[in-house]
Length: 329
Image (cartoon, rainbow, N blue to C red; front, side):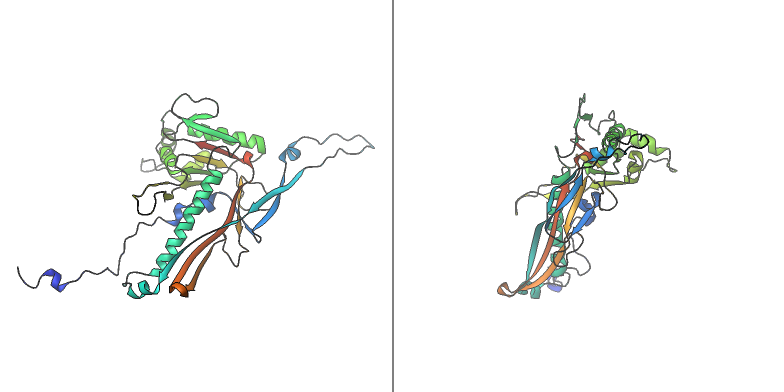
């Protein structure tokens, strides 16, 4: 064997220009994109709600000379409350590891990304539980593989299904009941995949393409459903125990959809399907009650990087939402 060998003249060390980490993008998470965020100064408090039946009834009447006008009042419910819970996760960077780290590693930056991602996964799961589930909204539909009955639709991956008509029927139902037309559609990735490949969408879009190829994305879906925003849930979660084989899936399952009304911003006497109360009064927290802290833990000779969020996701008006489950086989 010729000497010296390759191993004698070169010792492998980490490249300073690259490192590989399959870290999902923060844009995958949609919790802040569906319902308005309400900044609050107190961790718990109450808010008022108005019964729409009082406001939408026809009570004005003809007034005879010398008589009083007809009048009435309206009910206000002050029993509604929110309670922001604090969620947190930390990563310790010990002095020995820091002193021994090679050039490509930025331990503080990595710990910040690591703890932030953990909190985003928690927040997305709570969003799915609060809004993307059965028996939350007044209109609750199930996708079925054949012969849909009451409160059922043919699953949208079936080319004979009618997703455009299904959504427009739900929109009309919500508008007729509340006076507000739904303007936000949130769906799982499997539902999104079914829609962009559905013949009804392809046929309606392809003739507007100069290249002759139908390119369907959220903007085209929004136009066909006439909503201001279409949001796709792309975030994933590993449900396996530490050290076990990873078991990842879309948060929320990927096979459901929510149609709702959400105002551009929260305000007095402003209805919404949901509001997210964010405890921004918690010692300088950000828009989502979020704080990123770095502090010394001398007892374990480490710097602690900690991410924290404080919020409460509340369904405000069940009549302002329609939910579909099992939309894809």
